[in-house]
Length: 219
Ligand code: DC
Image 1 (cartoon, protein in one colour):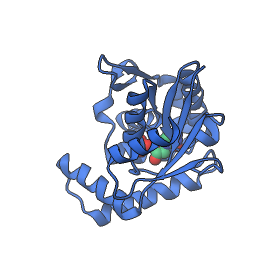
Image 2 (cartoon, rainbow, N blue to C red):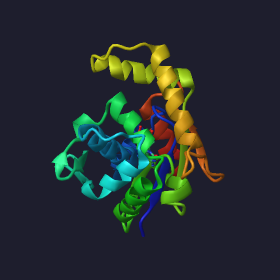
Image 3 (cartoon, protein in one colour):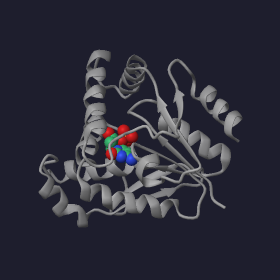
Image 4 (cartoon, protein in one colour):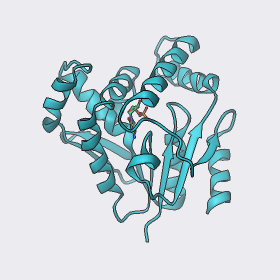
């Protein structure tokens, strides 16, 4: 029987690091749903499509094919129309476009059906915003991963600095708050903590500490 772990939470709380590490430890498949929304955001930017024009975005959805695949070391790669775009989607601009277009019902329907298909018959660890509440409501383990605003902003700031991006912790915090607001207030499947989720607070903890704790408690 397959085992499903659903991981939800706001940006930069540490969801994907934890999901990836748990999947590796347990020999499960890792499914990064944010990367799929980012792939659509990337397409819209590349093709100069106004991300705020829902009708226009919906009209090009049939031209967008998003797939996930794994290399020999089991690292996840995201493909847009057959092209590996994994190292092009981790930017503030693409994250923003993903957050905006993820509000549209047709975008969500397209990706949610793909996400459910990917999770079929496989033990998996899937992270995102609506996994426990919508994509995999019968998941065996539901984790809600969070961290203080300051901690998330600091993490994101250090990531951006490493990439050579000139920003400040305050600016990053403002962007995070705007994204949190949009992701929690949208009409369709907003980020929410389901009542049977286990809270995982990653503030001031290393990913090893968090993952060890989860493995000890639930496996
Ligand atoms: O987790 P991330 O930062 O890569 O996600 C980018 C955006 O995609 C996020 O701001 C909202 C959207 N998203 C979503 O609506 N539902 C998901 N399951 C995952 C991501």
